[in-house]
Amino acid sequence: MKNVSLFALVIMAGCSFKKNPMVNQTHKGHEELYTVPNAPKITETENIKRIVIAATNDVEAHYSPHHVTFKDEHNPGTQQMSIGGAEAMSAYFKILREQYKNVLLVDSGDIFSAKSEIKEVQNFYEKNKYDAHTVGLNDFNLKLPKGITSSAQLFKEYARDSSVPVLLSNLYEVKTARGVEWKGTQPYLLKNISGVKVGIIGLIPDDIVSMTPVDNRLALYVENMLTNTLRQARLLRSLGAEIIVVLTHQGINCGHEMAQESKLPLQKVNFEPTDPNACELNSALGTYLQRLPPHLIDVVVGGRNHEKMANYVNGNIVLGNFEQGKSMVYAEFFVDIKSKTVLKDRTIVHQPVMFCHEFFKKTNDCFTQDPSVDHARRIPAKFLGKDLGLIKAPDSVTNAEQLQSINFAQALIELDADIAFTPPTSKSSQLIVLQVPGKLLLNALEEDYNNSSFKNWYPSPYTQEKDGLHLMLKGETIDPDEFYSVLTDLEGMHVHRALSQALFHANSKAKTGHSWTSFETADTVKTRMAAQAR
Image 1 (tube, helix red, strand yellow):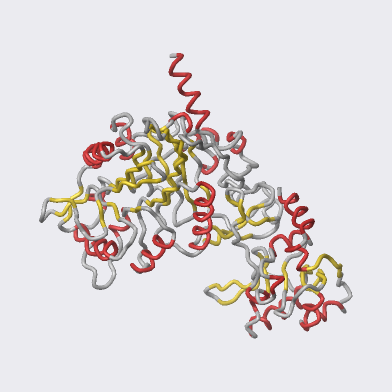
Image 2 (cartoon, one colour):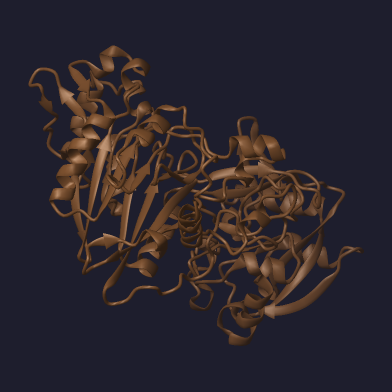
């Protein structure tokens, strides 16, 4: 019993997420819940290599950002936050590779959507240099594009021109009684990453047969997942694989019981990967994991249930994400090059990382479901110690050399303004904050929209709905009788008729501040603002 307890403590020490993860498991208040803003520690030596397995699932060709709306206790009305999108995903992947070097990036299925085009999906996985991917339940259940008669034809056409291998380890053609041998598909993949061999298997879930139209899988046969894993994993081990990854579009519920008992949102629980009671084992994936022989594989990337998975089940790590490209999940493995073994006690399992565009200043996170947090004050998002560069200045100012990288999100926070106006002629004149009546601001915004000058306003107040164009700030319709703080510079004020009029309004208050260039070039300002952001 003592040995078991000691083993558990060793594993727990190696598999932590935060210094005190339980702090976040509260009804109110959290910090860095789905983010890793700080640089990783250097823990490699000459004989020990760190390999990072990173994964997405259920992206479903959702390459546009999600504009999440929410409320909190500190601000009236509805607010909005952008999460995900192809640009954000690429930025996170880039930093992940820069900081860790030895990264394997995979996807466990549901790569298509009903509206996606084959080339669009291919471009996403190729551009982001995925090492491998497979297909999922919805990929079999799609309404097939015109001219495509079956899922087999869809997968064939996709894989044929894809530079990223499509792993279909347990999918067979009835006609040949052999595993599919379509161009671009493989039964497994063996990658050499800095001297470490990583084997990857892509499994079609067993229940595909009962959950898909027969016409979509005509002439295809799915071999039992466990049977196929035993064969493929043993082959990969014989070929020298030190780490084996299984991709399969199935999920396992983790943290549900804890959420019920503690009356917490599910998103705030499941922080201890080694908790033996965290996951419900009576699912298809739970059964599969329990039946696997010890040490046969190392990590399973699942999906479908659109929930976070970052747990050990029967000694195997299970990873999974939220839906439609909102997050990625990863684990760090340390391999002894001499003995060719994974140092299990040093493995680190990370919670899913949201593809945040910006953080709430109070939490260093973009988790929106905690109403106790003041969500109005924000800072640009960071990942592994680096700025993501997702909050950009309007296109109108990029022609001035001094303004190419202005961070308007920080400028608005620093000078306590609601919105900024910057004309193309802006260079380095002094900033000013005007108190503009809503009626005048509405007229200015409507006029600029009609004149195609809408890009000069940040953050954009223009929201296109089915019933027409709405002018909103911080999720609320602009009130003609209220006053709003508009950040601009002296040049901007003079060239814009409505802002010039604001100076002559009885209730107008103007105050001078920094210059646009000071936010970008003065080291003292940057240092001070960085300190305030912490």
